[in-house]
Length: 455
Image (cartoon, rainbow, N blue to C red; front, top):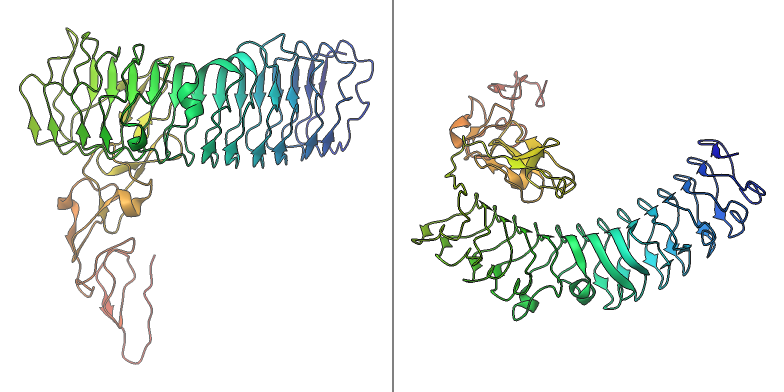
């Protein structure tokens, strides 16, 4: 027997279930009720390479359960009831790369030594849990392909958390609660992507030194609390090609901040820059090709400010009607471009009248009633109450996705023109009623206590 699929049954135990199945390669047990997986379960299945036990109510996996599986290449135990990853729980054979999925669990804790002997170019996915801290020496591998700890509650990472990792191609720590770049991340050799978006990082504690010891190709620090860029932050990051620092609070960039890098693209839209100096975007080696700087209140641009661009680069002046498209490559296809709507090949900022999402890619329209938005790619909290502008008092917006203040109309007869319109547009005066949300309000009939009636 080489393949067993027993999904969505009522299996409660798999003890001794696979004895003498020495040729078993694939095992699918999703949607059962297996609370405990013992370390003797797979003692005879030496060739097993594919295991998926999603949504099985698993509460315990004994240490060294998977150690003897020399060909294990895929292990998915997501969406279970595991609270802690104990020491040696994910200790592997180390002879082959393995994709390990532990996402959407109840995890709050990872123990030291819980991921040992991971094969060359393995991947570990731990997103959508409730992990608050990472202790020392959790992961052991010469090279990891992916390490995803996004969408947790991380506030602290021990300085030696990644001490037994040689290098990682792709690291994601986005959507956590970090306030600075941890020392463990500073020291980690990240080859391609380092994602730290959607945290509370302001970099102020690191203004006198480089923020990383090793240079990734792409660094994502979007949607944080960065207020200024020091010329020391990126010094020494010679192989850095793309920098994502959009949707922060950046009002000042020190001259020479990007000097010595290999930056080709800088995404810095949606900040608070008012001035562009002649040396602000000088990378010295003429590599800069794309600068996305819209949605900044720029008032002054010095002569020569665009001279650092590489030959044949294109600079566009934008209006509300300009079509802006980001061409997606294989390297950044999996990134989340907040405030964007994307296809498989391009991303485009949310159009006027819309605002961006903080969960996933896409845009929402500003609702009818009293809202509009005139900017492209606008995103603050991902909620219309903060990301859409309000019509002036005494006016309302009768259309979905209104693009300018001129779409706001005067409140109709019988409404309270001294209050600000919301989802219900202009509220009726006391003792008035209406049968259409955006229409006029009529006096209540004599002797009748009428309420507002909406369609």
